[in-house]
Length: 590
Image (cartoon, rainbow, N blue to C red; front, side, top):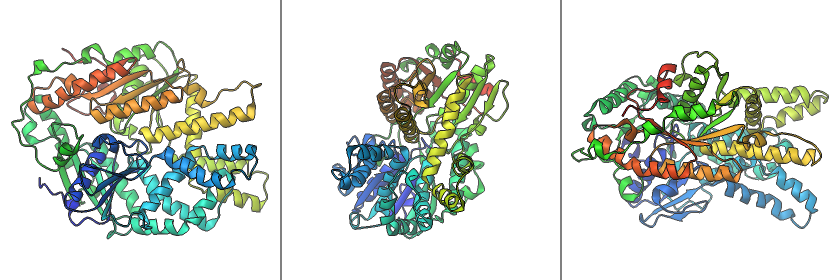
């Protein structure tokens, strides 16, 4: 592989990295930023991921302000923190009227601006500012975007056009959480953002995938959606490909064959894109020196510690132990949460299949906009039904419901105004939360296993649950008994949160941060699952043994954090049916 990837040939000002969670977008984006800065370019690296880990990769505290990366002259970074952005946005709206309005009115306005929709608008506002070249960022030669996992990113890229279209037809009413006058002032900025995104001389989209059928299918879906938005300058990066020289034992050979088959069968539309393959490295991509090696071929003897040097705990911590504990009840809510790409869908499916095998009624569903449940579980299982909370379908159903209820007694003018208001991009957030609430309610009678969206998107959903709880509590008062979705989520007897991670530095750090966020919301994770453990698979390949050795410290770290733990070994083949999913829950023979 050339040390200069094709996507870095004559790069335009804006370079976006997008793809399914866990494919290595952050590593590739960070390595790209360093590459450009080392060639005397002024570079701003921006994360639009609500669960950004750019600071962790650089071992530098970044946050919501432009921060120079001292080890790399010319490189600065910015993490668009949704909560900080939302707080600043609220202050811009409330600040001018503080002292002019009664405290009760200020409290009502503040509450109306506390939901996930305001958080989305605030993040979007910062995003469009970066694209509009308003002077604040004019001195940078390149702005590199490390984006959220695909579904959330497509949503972000759609927003400039969505809000522009919405403002062209009318501003709606207070159901859009109040900030519409602020949005209207930036109409020209949003139009400029749309123009920048669709101009190939200004914007290049790099689709990042792994050599796996699920991520390549996701890239093909993204390719179609970007074309619908008018974004055409695309490159494909297949990251983390197992080097041929590392394929020296049955496990590594099987993994290599699996990757080769996935690449050979990739969708034709994606296969035609300019493509770069980036080899898997024996070290984790944390720190400047590691990132600078990402585009280079790794040259060593591929030998690592002997098998006896690698400790494994998988036989003592099988997933079946967790299912044993879950099955003591005949119903409940099980949320599989974590960073994108750690295998939440696979673990959620394995838990659901095993619970159904034991005779329970189980509903397996997903809140992930980029879900692929049908690819993981492509068959019917007795006692198990599978669904998906589809944002588009949920929005259509929500609009129809509101028009049939709230709009039933309105005149033609009122119905037209209501229909216009429901075209706001905020409506999707409300609709998805409504569907999620129904799922939470169903778990009173059966097991509901939820494959959640990647961390940042899930936290926004929980934020909506918190906002709804506060509003219901305010309306109902102390004298009334009620139960909200948030109250069920906070009930450990009803809800079990399983954090899924990999035995790698960044996923474990993100899982720790997620656990802290959940505990602040009075939700205590019930268990952790370490997925795709190379150490647990007991490899003989020297290259894989090096990666396995690096897992040991992370496994120990999880054991300190978790109330209970399960370890699932890396498998030679992808688990794509009920039989292979059942095998996941069993311990690896010693």
